Image (cartoon, rainbow, N blue to C red; front, top):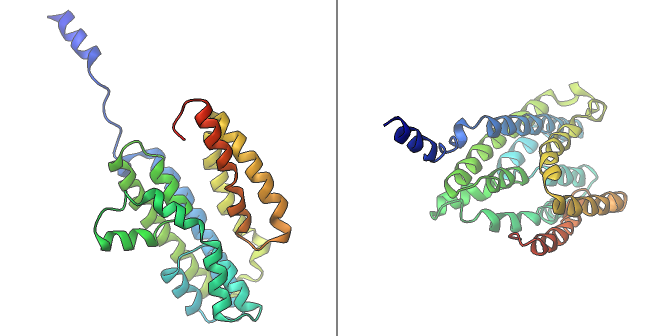
Length: 244
Protein backbone atom coordinates (compact mmCIF):
# COMPACT_ATOMS: atom_id res chain seq x y z
CA UNK A 1 0.00 0.00 0.00
CA UNK A 2 2.78 2.38 0.88
CA UNK A 3 4.60 1.81 -2.43
CA UNK A 4 1.35 2.25 -4.36
CA UNK A 5 0.64 5.49 -2.55
CA UNK A 6 4.14 6.78 -3.18
CA UNK A 7 3.98 5.84 -6.85
CA UNK A 8 0.61 7.53 -7.18
CA UNK A 9 1.90 10.61 -5.41
CA UNK A 10 5.00 10.85 -7.61
CA UNK A 11 3.02 10.50 -10.83
CA UNK A 12 0.50 13.16 -9.89
CA UNK A 13 0.50 16.17 -12.15
CA UNK A 14 1.99 19.37 -10.72
CA UNK A 15 -0.48 21.86 -9.24
CA UNK A 16 -1.81 24.45 -11.68
CA UNK A 17 -0.18 27.88 -11.60
CA UNK A 18 -1.88 30.47 -9.39
CA UNK A 19 -4.49 32.70 -10.96
CA UNK A 20 -3.13 36.05 -12.20
CA UNK A 21 -4.90 37.84 -9.36
CA UNK A 22 -2.77 35.80 -6.90
CA UNK A 23 0.42 35.50 -8.93
CA UNK A 24 3.04 37.43 -6.91
CA UNK A 25 5.38 37.96 -9.87
CA UNK A 26 2.64 39.34 -12.10
CA UNK A 27 1.28 41.56 -9.33
CA UNK A 28 4.77 42.88 -8.63
CA UNK A 29 5.36 43.72 -12.27
CA UNK A 30 1.96 45.39 -12.60
CA UNK A 31 2.59 47.49 -9.50
CA UNK A 32 6.05 48.53 -10.71
CA UNK A 33 4.87 49.52 -14.18
CA UNK A 34 1.76 51.19 -12.79
CA UNK A 35 3.79 53.17 -10.28
CA UNK A 36 6.20 54.28 -12.99
CA UNK A 37 3.28 55.22 -15.25
CA UNK A 38 1.78 57.29 -12.46
CA UNK A 39 5.05 59.17 -12.01
CA UNK A 40 5.24 59.93 -15.72
CA UNK A 41 1.58 60.97 -15.56
CA UNK A 42 2.50 63.55 -12.91
CA UNK A 43 5.11 64.90 -15.32
CA UNK A 44 2.59 65.07 -18.18
CA UNK A 45 -0.03 66.88 -16.11
CA UNK A 46 2.48 69.38 -14.74
CA UNK A 47 4.06 70.08 -18.14
CA UNK A 48 0.66 70.69 -19.71
CA UNK A 49 -0.54 73.15 -17.07
CA UNK A 50 2.84 74.86 -16.71
CA UNK A 51 2.80 75.44 -20.48
CA UNK A 52 -0.47 77.34 -20.26
CA UNK A 53 -3.16 74.70 -20.82
CA UNK A 54 -6.10 74.57 -18.41
CA UNK A 55 -6.22 71.73 -15.90
CA UNK A 56 -9.09 69.96 -17.64
CA UNK A 57 -7.17 69.47 -20.92
CA UNK A 58 -4.57 66.90 -19.72
CA UNK A 59 -7.14 65.25 -17.43
CA UNK A 60 -9.76 64.76 -20.15
CA UNK A 61 -7.11 63.78 -22.69
CA UNK A 62 -5.81 61.07 -20.38
CA UNK A 63 -9.29 59.67 -19.77
CA UNK A 64 -10.46 59.76 -23.39
CA UNK A 65 -7.24 59.29 -25.39
CA UNK A 66 -5.00 57.44 -22.89
CA UNK A 67 -1.98 57.31 -25.18
CA UNK A 68 1.14 58.05 -23.11
CA UNK A 69 3.90 59.28 -25.42
CA UNK A 70 1.34 60.39 -28.01
CA UNK A 71 -0.18 62.68 -25.39
CA UNK A 72 3.20 64.27 -24.71
CA UNK A 73 3.69 64.85 -28.43
CA UNK A 74 0.19 66.25 -28.95
CA UNK A 75 0.59 68.68 -26.04
CA UNK A 76 4.00 69.67 -27.40
CA UNK A 77 2.38 70.57 -30.71
CA UNK A 78 -0.31 72.62 -28.95
CA UNK A 79 2.17 74.47 -26.77
CA UNK A 80 4.31 75.21 -29.82
CA UNK A 81 1.36 76.96 -31.46
CA UNK A 82 0.03 74.11 -33.60
CA UNK A 83 -3.68 73.53 -34.01
CA UNK A 84 -5.82 70.66 -32.70
CA UNK A 85 -5.72 68.85 -36.05
CA UNK A 86 -1.92 68.84 -36.12
CA UNK A 87 -1.82 67.61 -32.53
CA UNK A 88 -4.31 64.83 -33.30
CA UNK A 89 -2.38 63.78 -36.42
CA UNK A 90 0.83 63.55 -34.39
CA UNK A 91 -0.84 61.35 -31.81
CA UNK A 92 -2.34 59.07 -34.44
CA UNK A 93 1.03 58.64 -36.15
CA UNK A 94 2.76 57.64 -32.94
CA UNK A 95 0.02 55.19 -32.01
CA UNK A 96 -0.01 53.24 -35.28
CA UNK A 97 1.85 50.43 -33.51
CA UNK A 98 -1.26 49.76 -31.45
CA UNK A 99 -3.00 48.39 -34.54
CA UNK A 100 -0.64 45.41 -34.53
CA UNK A 101 -0.96 45.06 -30.75
CA UNK A 102 -4.76 45.00 -31.04
CA UNK A 103 -4.60 42.14 -33.54
CA UNK A 104 -2.38 40.22 -31.12
CA UNK A 105 -4.89 40.44 -28.26
CA UNK A 106 -8.15 40.42 -30.26
CA UNK A 107 -8.97 36.90 -29.10
CA UNK A 108 -8.33 37.83 -25.47
CA UNK A 109 -10.88 40.63 -25.25
CA UNK A 110 -13.97 38.46 -25.68
CA UNK A 111 -16.69 38.52 -28.34
CA UNK A 112 -19.06 41.21 -27.05
CA UNK A 113 -18.75 44.73 -28.43
CA UNK A 114 -18.73 46.40 -24.97
CA UNK A 115 -15.82 44.22 -23.89
CA UNK A 116 -13.94 44.84 -27.15
CA UNK A 117 -14.45 48.61 -27.04
CA UNK A 118 -13.28 48.86 -23.43
CA UNK A 119 -10.39 46.47 -24.06
CA UNK A 120 -9.28 48.44 -27.12
CA UNK A 121 -9.05 51.53 -24.93
CA UNK A 122 -6.74 49.68 -22.54
CA UNK A 123 -4.38 48.28 -25.21
CA UNK A 124 -0.86 49.53 -24.47
CA UNK A 125 2.66 48.16 -24.81
CA UNK A 126 2.50 46.95 -21.21
CA UNK A 127 -0.94 45.30 -21.18
CA UNK A 128 -0.14 43.38 -24.37
CA UNK A 129 3.20 42.24 -22.91
CA UNK A 130 1.56 41.09 -19.67
CA UNK A 131 -1.18 39.21 -21.56
CA UNK A 132 0.99 37.43 -24.11
CA UNK A 133 3.43 36.32 -21.41
CA UNK A 134 0.77 33.99 -19.96
CA UNK A 135 0.51 30.34 -20.97
CA UNK A 136 -3.23 29.81 -21.46
CA UNK A 137 -6.15 31.90 -22.75
CA UNK A 138 -7.79 32.28 -19.35
CA UNK A 139 -4.66 33.67 -17.73
CA UNK A 140 -3.99 35.91 -20.73
CA UNK A 141 -7.45 37.43 -20.41
CA UNK A 142 -7.14 37.92 -16.65
CA UNK A 143 -3.64 39.40 -16.92
CA UNK A 144 -4.75 41.83 -19.63
CA UNK A 145 -7.67 43.18 -17.63
CA UNK A 146 -5.74 43.27 -14.36
CA UNK A 147 -2.82 45.21 -15.80
CA UNK A 148 -5.05 47.36 -18.03
CA UNK A 149 -7.31 48.58 -15.23
CA UNK A 150 -4.40 49.14 -12.83
CA UNK A 151 -2.33 51.09 -15.35
CA UNK A 152 -5.29 53.19 -16.49
CA UNK A 153 -6.17 54.13 -12.92
CA UNK A 154 -2.62 54.99 -11.82
CA UNK A 155 -1.82 56.95 -14.99
CA UNK A 156 -4.92 59.12 -14.61
CA UNK A 157 -4.36 59.67 -10.90
CA UNK A 158 -0.82 60.81 -11.69
CA UNK A 159 -2.00 63.16 -14.45
CA UNK A 160 -4.60 64.72 -12.16
CA UNK A 161 -2.03 65.20 -9.39
CA UNK A 162 0.46 66.79 -11.77
CA UNK A 163 -2.17 69.07 -13.32
CA UNK A 164 -3.36 70.26 -9.93
CA UNK A 165 0.23 70.89 -8.83
CA UNK A 166 0.66 72.99 -11.97
CA UNK A 167 3.60 75.32 -11.86
CA UNK A 168 4.41 74.40 -8.25
CA UNK A 169 6.68 71.60 -9.47
CA UNK A 170 8.61 73.93 -11.77
CA UNK A 171 10.57 72.27 -14.55
CA UNK A 172 9.70 68.56 -14.29
CA UNK A 173 12.78 67.66 -16.35
CA UNK A 174 14.86 68.55 -13.29
CA UNK A 175 13.37 65.61 -11.38
CA UNK A 176 13.85 63.14 -14.22
CA UNK A 177 10.28 61.90 -13.88
CA UNK A 178 10.04 60.75 -17.49
CA UNK A 179 13.01 58.41 -16.96
CA UNK A 180 11.07 56.23 -14.51
CA UNK A 181 8.92 54.50 -17.10
CA UNK A 182 11.65 53.34 -19.51
CA UNK A 183 13.80 52.32 -16.54
CA UNK A 184 11.11 49.99 -15.19
CA UNK A 185 10.37 48.58 -18.65
CA UNK A 186 14.05 47.86 -19.17
CA UNK A 187 14.16 46.01 -15.86
CA UNK A 188 11.21 43.85 -16.94
CA UNK A 189 12.70 43.08 -20.36
CA UNK A 190 16.21 42.11 -19.22
CA UNK A 191 15.29 38.60 -17.94
CA UNK A 192 13.80 37.68 -21.33
CA UNK A 193 16.90 38.98 -23.12
CA UNK A 194 19.14 36.84 -20.94
CA UNK A 195 17.17 33.67 -21.73
CA UNK A 196 16.60 34.05 -25.48
CA UNK A 197 19.61 34.45 -27.79
CA UNK A 198 17.52 35.21 -30.90
CA UNK A 199 15.63 37.87 -28.95
CA UNK A 200 18.92 39.55 -28.06
CA UNK A 201 19.99 39.48 -31.71
CA UNK A 202 16.74 41.22 -32.62
CA UNK A 203 16.67 43.71 -29.74
CA UNK A 204 20.18 45.07 -30.15
CA UNK A 205 19.86 46.14 -33.83
CA UNK A 206 16.40 47.52 -33.08
CA UNK A 207 17.71 49.55 -30.15
CA UNK A 208 20.69 50.78 -32.21
CA UNK A 209 18.37 51.91 -35.00
CA UNK A 210 16.10 53.72 -32.53
CA UNK A 211 19.05 55.53 -30.94
CA UNK A 212 20.46 56.52 -34.32
CA UNK A 213 17.27 58.20 -35.53
CA UNK A 214 16.20 59.75 -32.20
CA UNK A 215 17.84 63.18 -32.88
CA UNK A 216 16.15 63.61 -36.27
CA UNK A 217 12.60 62.18 -35.94
CA UNK A 218 9.64 63.06 -33.70
CA UNK A 219 9.26 61.40 -30.32
CA UNK A 220 7.72 57.94 -30.57
CA UNK A 221 8.86 57.25 -34.13
CA UNK A 222 12.11 55.55 -32.96
CA UNK A 223 9.98 52.96 -31.16
CA UNK A 224 8.20 52.15 -34.41
CA UNK A 225 11.46 51.82 -36.32
CA UNK A 226 12.91 49.57 -33.61
CA UNK A 227 10.24 47.00 -34.50
CA UNK A 228 12.37 46.17 -37.54
CA UNK A 229 14.36 43.96 -35.17
CA UNK A 230 11.34 41.62 -35.02
CA UNK A 231 12.19 40.46 -38.54
CA UNK A 232 15.48 39.12 -37.21
CA UNK A 233 13.73 37.44 -34.28
CA UNK A 234 11.24 35.77 -36.63
CA UNK A 235 14.05 34.47 -38.83
CA UNK A 236 15.98 33.16 -35.84
CA UNK A 237 12.93 31.38 -34.47
CA UNK A 238 12.29 29.63 -37.78
CA UNK A 239 15.92 28.59 -38.05
CA UNK A 240 15.79 27.02 -34.58
CA UNK A 241 12.47 25.30 -35.28
CA UNK A 242 10.52 27.37 -32.74
CA UNK A 243 7.18 29.13 -33.40
CA UNK A 244 7.80 32.57 -34.95
